[in-house]
Image (cartoon, rainbow, N blue to C red; front, side, top):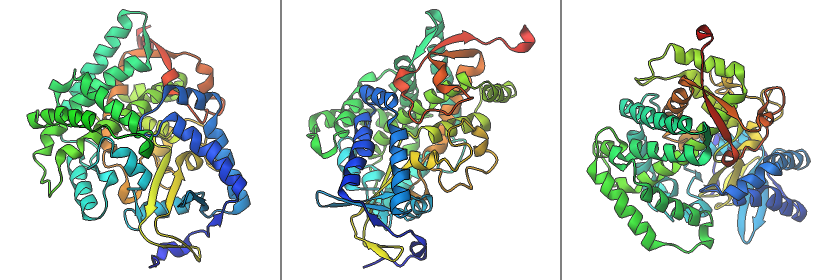
Length: 456
């Protein structure tokens, strides 16, 4: 059966890539992405990606192929599987808007990877189970609400962890690197999701990290049922405690409708890792862009940071960081049936690959390689189909508002009384195009007390 959705008639006609171009896509697009780590980032892979500008090479290749084959999805048949690399922003939006039917987020590769640690998660679910789990996630995470009802607890947790982080840094040589930041961020995430008692449960995070490392290999890695069972038991202990102020407590207030609440929590912890990367990269941008930093400080000067605040400009800075360096470079969908594309038909089971950097850094965008938070405030980003920092359509990340609340609050506390000097700031100079790849592992700062101009 072929889809007759009216939107499908406006799609571009697909083209089939020849063998040489299939090999180039594998070498310049797929392999580097896998090397950097899809489920959990690899330090060596990210260093390689930045050194050899793999995202710039990948977007250059896709732009070249779009000019040669046309704007339609580029078809690849590999090992009996059907793939389609999406080359046009309107086509990408068509696929995202068609989630979950006919374009399911539960692709075979994604399911094989995520089942290592969240076999009951919404991203690997289809049909009525997916609908029930999606509704449950939206309710707990309060999708569409900028200030979560648990925001007071979240803000308190962020302030305390950021304060301890700064105290440790300034008590020493003032250096702040990824490892130190991530430790504080993980403590914050555990408190937000599971409660204050989970703050120091580094074993839980380590178990999840090992399961995610195996998930990087998808079907190629053997399952680790023993490790997963230990992780789930430890996680359930925290969830059953249902500590007030945490998402764990909210779980009990939402009708589950057949959904196992503990099956959804691993993804929240997993997603906070990407949020930490975005926050750390935003700090790097603000340490090198004086005008935008002045805007943030102006916003903080009139805000009561002891209470939940929207901080729209600071949130826009985080969104802009994710536009510049998407924490999920590939957005994947798999068709559940045959679909019409510009008079052609793509068979059911075709996996659509949407490479976000191609659209976020489109050279037709006047702000392509610049740090421009304003586009998230003046309507520009909302009117631009090409931008999808948290995916899009019915499969859009239900936790995006919660993530933006926590990341913007963390940045606000870090910048409230401190200035940051970035090691090797030249790569992020505002007077030159920003790099297409930024290795967060390699970011290092020196934190210095900030002296307002009126105190000089």
